[in-house]
Image 1 (spheres, rainbow over the protein chains, first blue to last red):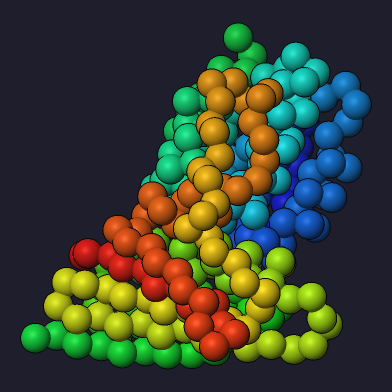
Image 2 (image 1 turned 120 degrees about the vertical axis):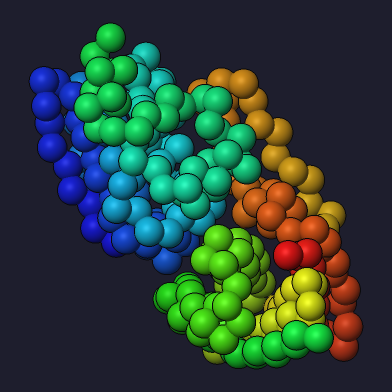
Length: 112
Length: 138
C-alpha cells in the first residue's frame, strides 16, 4: 500500500495504491491524518491504483471524508475500479460522496 | 459434474490477509471462476477473518483459522472454523446507513458486506469452535 499526495489550487489530492485492508489501515489512517492540514477543506481521493479494499480500509477513507465534512468542506472520489465501487455501493456510501471518473472531473466538482 | 475442493489455514495475524488473497488466486486459476467472483469470495473471507483475528482471541497465543472451499456445479460453499471465543455474526444487526456522511457510524460494515455478497450465511458453535458456512450461487 502506498499513499501519495499533492496540493493543487488549495485542493488536496490523496492517491492510495495497492491493498487497503485491516492490516494496512492503521498506517494509512496515520499517514492521511498527517496529510490533512488543519485548513484543508477540499479533498479528492484518487483510487485509480487501489487494487483491493475491505471494510477496514473503507473506514479510513470515510473517517477522512467525515473530518472534511465536519469542517464544512467538500470531498470527492475518483478512479474507482468496478470492484472498489462495489464495496462503496454495498456499504451504501455511493449516494453520500460524489464519485467522478477522472481526477479532472473530481477537481472540477470540488472547485464549484 | 464439476467439483473442486480447496482448503488452507491461516495464523491469527492480519498480515495473513495477503496469503488469503494468494490462496484465492490459486483457487481461481484451478476453477476458472471469474475475477469478480474470486474477489467477492476474497472480500467475504477477509471480513470474517479480520473479525476473528481482531476480536476472537483473549490470549496472546498463536491460533489457526481453517478455511475450506467447495465448488460443486454452480454452488460455492465456504467454511471457516476457529477456536476463538463464541461469536455469532448472524446475530449482528446491519448498521443503519444514514442519509448524510456526517452521521455515519464507522463500524459493523464487514458483516453487512458479507450478507450482501453471499446468498446464505450460517453459524454454529460446536466442540469449542466457531463454524461459519457461506454459500454463493454462481
